[in-house]
Length: 450
Image (cartoon, rainbow, N blue to C red; front, top):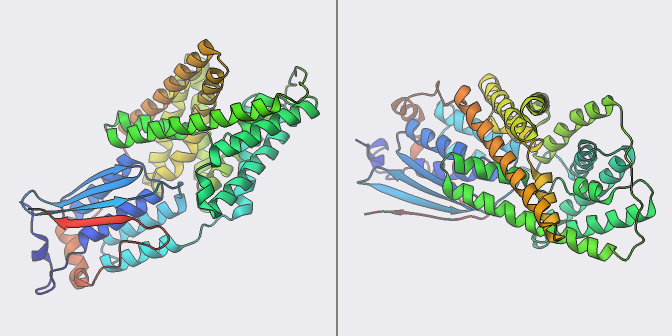
């Protein structure tokens, strides 16, 4: 039997802050880039620890919540604009949640702290962000078989895309055209550079320059949500990624058409590079993606270790069962490493898993599939699309197996519901801070149901 919320409050107050706190916590976790499965599980267990039956439905653009039993319950709805992952804020928000459950922070103070975290400026500025784009593009060029010249040109194009990303962040109205606009600019410049500089491969530097924008991670997370029966979130993520793929492919096709009037470049034979170049790229790429995901410097070592495990698993698996199935072994290693890191450091596994997955996702294969289809190469385009889907399914399966073999931490040491509520004392009666925030407005509603 569910206890009425009003019986847990001092006489005469009639205010229960727990639903408002849980909604505010859900909003903060969502904005920090928490996957649907993790967010819904964390909110249900947090509500249970506070003595409030909670059901959560999370999608990439909204959160629907129900609090209380079937006889007396309230619902809450948040409309949220999808944002980029912010791993540092995710760690801080998770710390607030744990402080509330341990009785170290009142609910009212926790809501104030969540508002403060929302206002806190990002750690990494424009220069670090642009530099990370360049490093990621240069490293991708090496992974695609490029030599030093193509790596340098790809890094320059990635630098340009990073500048466009910073500018569109300051003028959000331009953000809707960021991916196709960047694709047009990069593909045209790639054609121009290949025409002017001997040894430049236009297809390679185009893909490398746009690699950060290619939504292979969204495709993989969408399939993972579908595999874990989070159908609404998975479908939205999956089709959102497909639309981004299409806009990028359209931009690349338009840029190439504009570049057809330039002198054609000669065929290029790429020269091999020593193995230490690969090691340098493997060392720098995780740091670049950690900065793009806004991780803390103290998390860089763990992120690099998990990324290294993923690459090791993918290469070992690729040697024995092929590249497509080998990606699943890489995802298994990433999941195991991230879950082990969560249990060891009590930081969310997402902090270590996202950068590790980004180096395994099949974004480049999906990009090549769409560009082939736009150029009327039907059979190669379909083959690449099937390969990209198979790799994404392999990654999702590897993550599922990792969560079975070594489940993430599930609040084993948190207090019981009665202990948590008792430790909060009369702080439950303090009026709540507003759910809405001026910087990131979200429409919310919470009405009693019959």
